[in-house]
Image (cartoon, rainbow, N blue to C red; front, side):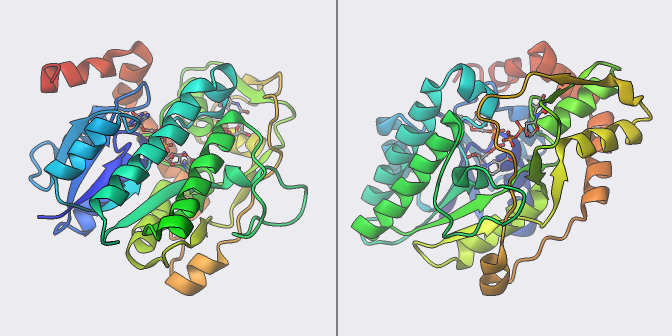
Length: 340
Ligand code: NAD
Ligand code: TYD
């Protein structure tokens, strides 16, 4: 029985992807390979524990032997590659692991898949990001032919991985497709990223740290819309091609924070302006015409509704993020797998 290998499936987007895929394509089995770094949380997938179409293996994408063995042990006919270090602020305080995981890890994975798929069979989806394009001024949109110009160690490492995938296609004819998506929001996002951080802090009446003047703009998309796009790109995307994913939804950070405060009936004076992030990209905005016209994808979640339901999800699942803040979520693996 063939598997789709999902790397990084215990993180925010990957866990939502796996749940969506199991629900909407139950005939397709999923093998989740994740190192369970601080960002990986097995509790995100408790609902699949007794699902026979889902399996989990703990491991590092940069571990060549283990990854090669994975391709020997399982019949893997497609890969959706999420695993990464993903937080810009962490890449500023410690860039090395970003190069190790995002660049070396991606290359190790590409090599293992290339060896296993020596006849060119299989499909590999590289989950890249709009941050590889760098920053926009007040006008304009990122298109797939916009030159890559990353600003942070995070985005530079993602750009390197993205380019390696394209190079594997050109050099070896490797069957890869790429997505570059804008900022995601939704349930199960680790509470160090803007939206869950602000919801968690506001709900506890704590100060909300807004970087700089708060007018940096991101193009927000609901994680379910991103994942629907990924499934279409995996299935129908042209090999070697890049697809931008965005929901035409530019929002200044301050506006998002104010919306969260409003939804939680908390005062605006919780906002605290703090020192700006070094190299802080000013504006991201995506042109996803290619994906819409060639593959027929459309975003479905309207932002005001998506944000409201996300706020409600964090309020209803307080235990989930409290266990992250206390560090308790990390015991889950030991309990469930006994250190295997
Ligand atoms: P996340 O940080 O929530 O999850 C990352 C997952 O990867 C975790 O489960 C972690 O344990 C795992 N991981 C880390 N290093 C690993 C390694 N060496 N081997 C195996 N697993 C490892 O990230 P996310 O927000 O879900 O993002 C997933 C992917 O999507 C990333 O590649 C990111 O660059 C990309 N992306 C994210 C966004 C966004 O807004 N979050 C937007 C566009 C693209
Ligand atoms: P983040 O969620 O880290 O995503 P990214 O940097 O990948 O876009 O941040 C989103 C925006 O919110 C970004 O402009 C930085 C800003 N931000 C704050 O103002 N305060 C915070 O505490 C955080 C985490 C982010």
